[in-house]
Image (cartoon, rainbow, N blue to C red; front, top):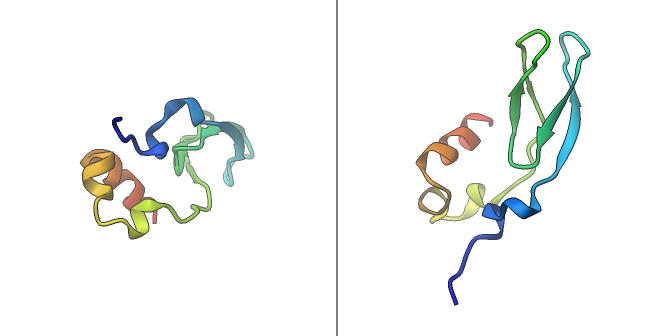
Length: 76
């Protein structure tokens, strides 16, 4: 059996709405995103990030990949 991190399972992604603090536009943000660019005004809107494996797992960088790891860490 091959182990796969449950955080990488795209079948478990969910979407929710986030309201832009600048213009009030309601945009869609997915569960694997921390911030998005508002399609209306271009402002970066971000959600309050919940703790994830990236915060405590020594293998997170290797597990999720350098590019995604950097995006998550930049969201702090």
